[in-house]
Image (cartoon, rainbow, N blue to C red; front, side):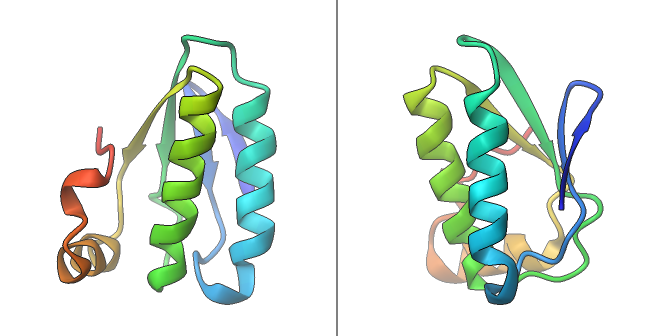
Length: 97
């Protein structure tokens, strides 16, 4: 679901409502273990499917990262995630790498 990768984390599961709770918790645990003042790269290249819950999950991870003084950056977002963010008017809130 979420793997440790060189320089950060890699999401390997669809970011859809069926996985949202498990992804949320896995991401929170991973971000909690990151060193303060660290920069964590979240690679979404392995995400084949997203829905609007993906945005909610990403924003929850951003809040957790900020609480932990960690800078979260998102790499390789699927085009469908970018489209959803534009549709909802929140593109500028995504911390794209």
